[in-house]
Amino acid sequence: MNLSGLSRGLFTFAAFVLVIAGLRSAGSIIIPFLLACFIALITSPAMIWMKKKGIRPSFAVLIIISTVLCALWLLVQIAGSSITQFAGDSDQYQIRLKQITVGWINWLTEKGIDVNSDTFNSLINPGKAMTYVVNTLTQFLKGMLTNTFMILLTVVFLLLELAGFPNKLQIALGVNHASVPALNRFSESLNRYLAIKSMVSLGTGLCAYILCRFIQLEYAPLWGILAFLLNYVPNIGSIIAAVPPVMLALVQLGTPRAIATGIGYLCINVIIGNLIEPKVMGKGLGLSTLVVWMSLIFWGWVFGPVGMLLSVPLTMIIKIAMESKAETQWIATLLGTDPGESALTDASLSEPSTPSETND
Image (cartoon, rainbow, N blue to C red; front, top):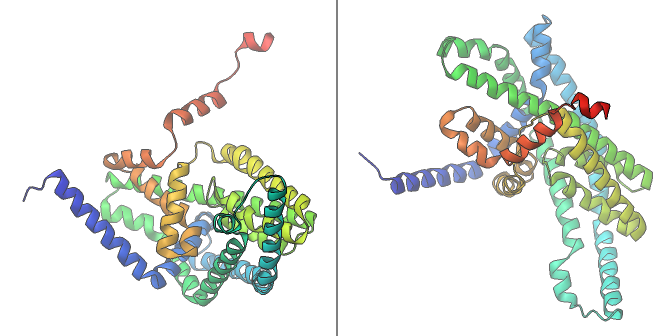
């Protein structure tokens, strides 16, 4: 049966809607699996390295799982108590933020700027933002703790499968099959991206923690962890991570230190996000800012806070998969940054100076 282009498009769109509806309905099952895949991908370079060193896969998995358990225990100890205290004090913070907002409105009115308080509160409501931050952090922590056993067990099976998957793939498809190099490129690119992004995110979280401690802001470990997690969302993740500590600094320490906190986060974002990360990442696997924002909204709608955290890695997987096939490379191009701008940037970075310029 021959189908017109419009019919094929409608069938494709209908299939897409059904898949998304199924993913959202099965979120309670899929979310732990996605977290397990995320942890397995981050730890897979260590698994591969230990395998090359002759360490048995089962012992290597034991080392990795023990490390993950220690990191998870540390995360719960640091973030759990901070989130609980922060949630308990959120009502007081909201009252103080409302008082500050009223003060701003009165100040604008004295300057001759007529501001409707209802309209101002509907457009700019720091109290709602504070409540959303508390709810999101609480849901994420509860989701992690509720499914810890299932997540770690899935990570064990994924890492054990990873040890022999390349050999199984070559046997199943044949060494010279066209899909084998593409899948290898896909795996290497994804592992490289996540490994580098994890190290950069760790540095971002550490810098945010030091900044908050220096300014004497409460819950500094929590804001460091939040900066670490949201740094997986490029371009806008660091901005979102800066909003809660800036609001808290406004309530706790006043306007001058709130401005200092915002400037500090801006410096961290510029130095790490715009200077260090591009040099370490090289050409990178960039997504356009619009795609990052839309993926944050889309995956957050499908899977909640965990979907927001994994929005960029999930979209990166789709982009890398699209790049692996000639038929779908145009989709990867649309998802990525401007190729012309990237080419000009790479050329300017790699162009050596001529002897005449040096002598002059």
